[in-house]
Image 1 (tube, rainbow, N blue to C red):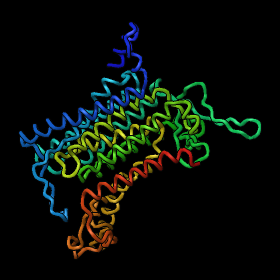
Image 2 (image 1 turned 135 degrees about the vertical axis):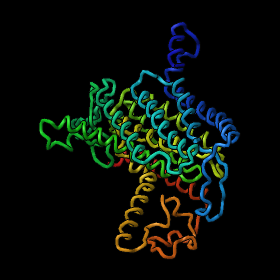
Image 3 (image 1 turned 30 degrees about the horizontal axis):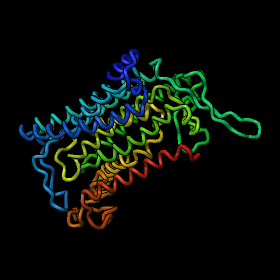
Image 4 (image 1 turned 120 degrees about the vertical axis):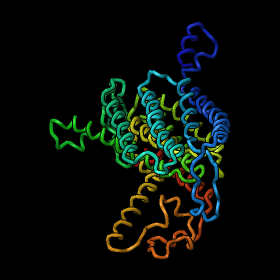
Length: 423
């Protein structure tokens, strides 16, 4: 909104109006505004929740070897994050941008899905919340909508990067002059840095173009669902998901910016995506919102994020990666989220397999994997066989686990960006 206001005022020579053209100015302003809103609104939101005695069911202190009891801690803190993202985005973003519209819709859709889940848990006193099937359908519906929008929208186009060889075996990276619809995506470690979904289904012959877009939409649904659930499972310790997500978003902000700058895109040999610079405004707002939320969510937490926040955050990360055609970098960037999901899947299937044979067995002491690090030997079931029952030998404090996960995510974020040059 303010972008269009100052663009109008610029016609009358109002001093400073031209600054609103600069993506760096609007992005940093969005970060600061989101942080301030998150910190200010968070305080009032927590007081309001406590005054109305709205809190999550007490978390089981038995899983914490240090016996920390978290009583009467409000949940649904994701509302703070979502409000702090949307207000700066609406004020500072160029709202006619198709990519920004997709991010706003994603935030509201998954935020609402998570809110319904939290509402059932808190007000209906049903710990199971919204059924897993309905949550999955909601995530898949969003993925389908995003995929089809990128396929059908005339504004969602890219300029493909190509290598041009000159005399003397010198190679130059240039971009095609015409922006086109494309199913290409960036893939690490390959020389040309691109993978075309159409080529994956080249066996379809004359139908390979349509099949390529179908594969792209399927991949979009899978990525959004997987990352959203991974972030949801990662949300089990104070500051864990907020910190990890802020780091991931900073890396995505770098990727979005270089994808929107033809000079950097040529240097890194990646596709140029006109209009994706507006995503940097959104991402900076999200980073500011998450950092502001950490003011209250850091150990010991004064408020929990809840599914209102975690489902939306994971989905936002997935959609961002899809839009800038960097979804195949997510296994590196979001490795923590994927390990959390994988640990739960392996644990459940291994337990079921043993049960069919009349054995009680588990791979880890507890899942998701972050809980495995805070279990003492005397907390284990003596009748159960654990594959990694002695790892780690001692229990780590919750804050130490969180910070070590943050450090791991920082390394993964740096590695993700470096892969653009390793090929």
